[in-house]
Length: 577
Image (cartoon, rainbow, N blue to C red; front, side, top):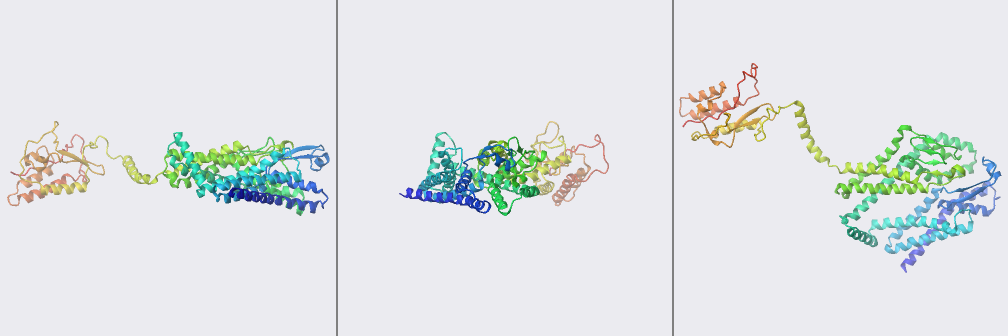
């Protein structure tokens, strides 16, 4: 019972929406009949005109037959003309679409019973279309079932789309059940991550709707700019018609209902597909080829081609897609998703937006006159395909930029810049660089270690036979590198504590050609006071260490490579027994 009541209410509301469109058409037609023709025309002709324009707004074509006298008065050859008019005045169609969307959103609040409202509204609108056809008897080449079915499906499809979107937003039970059945079907087919399907499907629809809205908005700005630039030509065409006040008003209303058609043509122009105003003509961003066009001021806004700069028009749509992708990438469903999902979602969204643009291009195409004017509008598949490709590029770039982790780049950038700067400055060559197993110690830390080790080293540690390397170098000595990369010095290794514990002063001085080190050893050996021997030895050792590692002081006189003594490093002095 509730479904029947909902269907009845929906049928009444659909009939009211149809009557609103009829009133919008009837008012200017009746004014023209009363003011211009002084009620001289037959009422049947006036009603046929009202019904025909309303059906034309809902994609039902009209047939016209002109006598030779009428054709001559219109500036044509003095012969009879017959043609079909199928270009819909989408301004009147927009009234029906808005009312249908409002009804569909309201019926979605009733849950599953709202589907009966969508069906009832479709039947109600079809009944009004049949009544208009029967009452006005417009001349149309279609059979009666097509005259009734096409307007009814137009109203019902918009109401059903609004009903489904509202149910998805509100989380209706029937919508959740449909999603569960879709998930089970995907699992049966072996698909993975089906639990994330609802969120990703909703995100895909949001991206598609946002991309379509941005494209239409950019087209509206392009149309406004074309009207401003072509205003002189528009005024010239208007003045050439020499209309009175009523005629100018009716011409304005006629162009107003055709303004959505011009908007969709501007969108097709931005994609690069362009549009045609008659057979053999084309208007694209690259070139414009137009023949004779109807004397309508709106055609004065058709832009000229930009030549090589025409590529800027599709680039605008790409930039719009980049903006939508950046906003979409901020959502957690897409930011935390893997890259496979981050690529698939924008591609599917752009395909949906391209299908919508193709549908709009098909609705804004048709015949607007005899002979060559039988082909006007944009090619739907070309415009939709180019729009999908351009939006896909923009969405992918935007999503990739939004998902990029710039924090890691900011952390790694200073180290990379410092490393590159050291390489550019030269640093040390590979021959003087220390091996991988050598220890690198900053200069300040090295001095602190040496002071601490010299003050805490035992003086009476027995000396064993320390291993020696093959080439005479001490394996207990390791090399240290200055952080600036200037010089390598040798320090005692932790693997040979005997060397650290102490060696005899004679062995420490053996092989060491540095006079400063021999002077330090002599000063420590000639100390006469046994009580102060240990403290003086520690002070002399500390001074010798600091002098040995003070590589910042260059030699007074440069020497050749042959005369320069080999610096084998400092040997730890052995304390006295």
